[in-house]
Image (cartoon, rainbow, N blue to C red; front, side, top):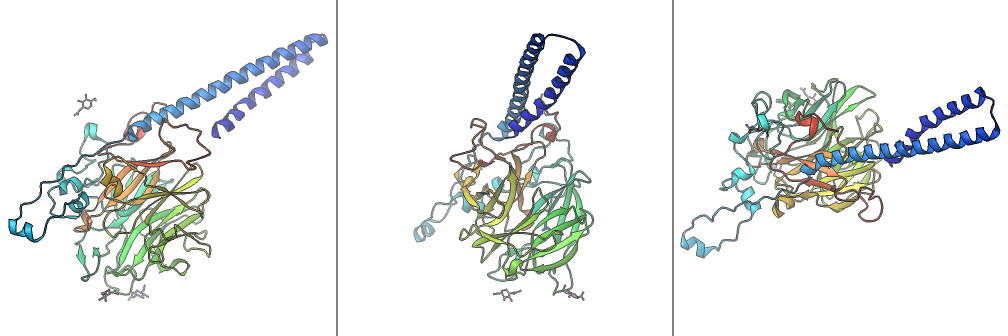
Length: 480
Ligand SMILES: *[C@@H]1O[C@H](CO)[C@@H](O)[C@H](O)[C@H]1NC(C)=O
Ligand SMILES: *[C@@H]1O[C@H](CO)[C@@H](O)[C@H](O)[C@H]1NC(C)=O
Ligand SMILES: *[C@@H]1O[C@H](CO)[C@@H](O)[C@H](O)[C@H]1NC(C)=O
């Protein structure tokens, strides 16, 4: 579609020029009708020829650009397999083996076992930490999913369940997330592993690799026990968007009590992306339970809240008011009965996409991609977008859970899939799994696949042990 519009535009100035030329020619000389007719024919032929050439030119430029783009993506779309050796079974006394025969352990068991001999595969030690401040030479700009990632001061980044805002004014990326640098404990026997609320951490970056700690931009309440942000409560999945009308940065988050019975959203605002944010209030949106959630700002400036509801059996979606401070009375139930959480929304070529996880607490599970023509639905489920690694990697979203999908300016069709590899034994040591997400299918597929099956562009998340963004993003000149 875009190609056609561009072609039509490019021929417009040409026809206007030739009109001027024709008018001068006919008024400036006295000539016979036949000369005039012949000139007209010649001019029309030239015009036709020019249009043909310019069409081919524009077309070939576009094909060239498209191919360069595809070449940049090809490396990221390479399927990378993982072959993880299971550790040898631990020695047990013959008596114990007789009493209770060992069931074979799986990779997921190993992941969940704090004392697993292959723990370092899932949670690499601090020795392998990614440190952008050390001149990494050829290793610069590489993401290593699962490794500890240090900020510019050399501390592990604390921005779990997070999301990224691109601030047009400062041309800077801001990464907000749960600051969890405290001890993990269980509030009671049946309670989930937790860390007391510390607040929302904020990090800034120009290159999406080097992150400066901007501090805690919304802090927990130490003393007031009735306050939503009291440290004994729960604050999860903070997301920030900018309101062009009011000039405010607006943060939405999941607010809960330690037993997850409050099931509410919370809202905070600030004049600056680095806070401090003023906490406004919490509520149950549309009167419904709300746990895992996200917000999404559409191209037309309308923002939406998406949240897991009705005991996490379904999601609800609805527009925010124009100040982004509350929901409106409009909402729809989507993915009803599918038990999805951790929604991450994005848009590509006018279609809306969402990645979600299943509901298994801190344990990882299979991601699903969904798509919709209209953001309010109907939403259709497309399937598991994960590619590479091995089967267990794909069935566990690479041992992680979705939190955000970040579009990359200048690279249409390429996104960063952001996920959390939770460590329930020590939540502060949960890791970030950032991977390339592409929408639109692989390079060898027909580009004009706009009808028939599959109806939607394919969404794929590619596993890589290490990877980096193409071109300018990793300090190289983009060759286009
Ligand atoms: C970095 O890459 C260049 C070019 O590929 C290579 O010649 C050089 O040995 C590499 N340096 C290191 C430290 O790996
Ligand atoms: C404690 O928090 C509640 C709820 O936000 C508020 O109404 C109350 O005024 C606060 N109390 C104090 C002493 O700040
Ligand atoms: C959470 O549940 C436990 C056990 O059911 C209970 O003892 C505790 O009082 C509850 N806490 C809150 C804040 O509701």
